[in-house]
Length: 178
Image (cartoon, rainbow, N blue to C red; front, side, top):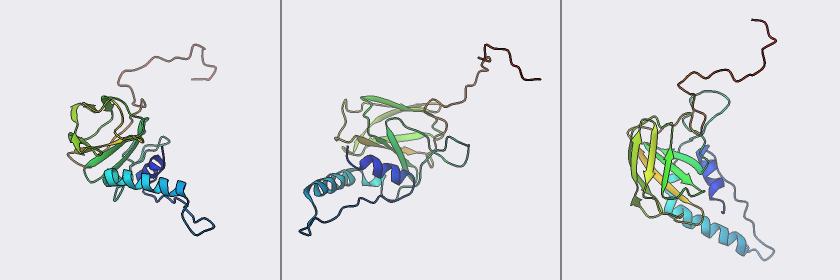
């Protein structure tokens, strides 16, 4: 899939990506490196706003903190201002949802086509419908989702704390006092 997933991961963390492209013995850039750079450049022309000037959007499963992002099994997130960029490297099909949304979603568009994507929000879940049945590019697509403030997601990817009390699942009596 090229270097786009690595570039997105680095951008989501506020870093820089070193591509390590060198010259051959004749002082020229080898064709495989040129092909990679041209592919990355084409992807950035369509999706660069999701990378250039983006803000760190990471998560930390070890502790609660001031992070504002979480895990996405289809790809990565980046953000800038009031826009969340959802990088879908594993295309979900025509319908896709994200949970744990702590802001009101206003609008969405697919960057590669600059076409609108219908969204609905129910509490902290935003569902996108009318996506193309297959990925708009070989490396996936990027959704630009506008919110009413800086985007924030919390405890998504199945890690949400349940609202109902759960019984103890330990079938053995405890040998600890108390």
